[in-house]
Image 1 (spheres, helix red, strand yellow):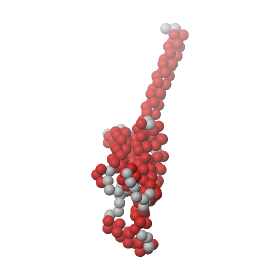
Image 2: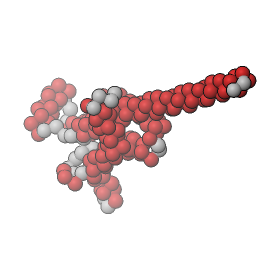
Image 3: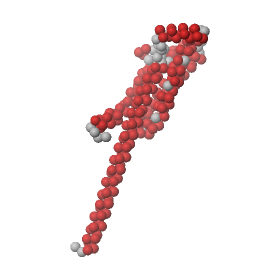
Amino acid sequence: MTPEWVSAWANLMMGLSAVVAGWAGIRGLNAWRAETVGRRKTELAEEVLAQFYRARDVLTWARFPASEDDEDEGRDEVRAGSGADDDELERSEIFTPVDRLTKESQVFSELQASRYRFMAYFGEEAARPFEEIRAIHTEVIDSAHNLIRTYGEDPTGSEEAERGRWEAAIGWGEGEGDPLKKRLDSAVKAIEQTCRPLIEERHKKRRNGLF
């Protein structure tokens, strides 16, 4: 083999080595990117699922009436301290869900702040439970305001049915048939269906020592 052929062969081998090294580097980079994106998706899924659980608990608590004993005790204390009559006390009770939700407003601010990141990773359809939580939150607050606004009026016909919906929204008298609670549970279940598989897969990998 002539020196020219030897040189050409060496150059060819060097070129092939560079191509193989470059291909391996690209594959490694792509694998690293995929792993990084997967880890971020899982971390976001854990964060969002925890936020939904917290939002569900706050909304449930906001709509939960005080026990009769606590209510009677509270009435006596308020009446003795401020001279408030029964109408004022009842209006205060109607507004209780708004007060409770206001105290926990950061829970819902953080949840909505996660919405667009969630959409970026999981898609707009998967993010619909965020809209449902916000709609439920708004319905509770608006219903309390409407009950205060129309307090003392004598509703008839459709107005009476509408007032019944407002009372149901703030948690008065629905019990097992509470439609708002069913919507809330459905929203949490929907977000679980998106987030839970990723979380369980990550925990499985941790148990197996993969990462």
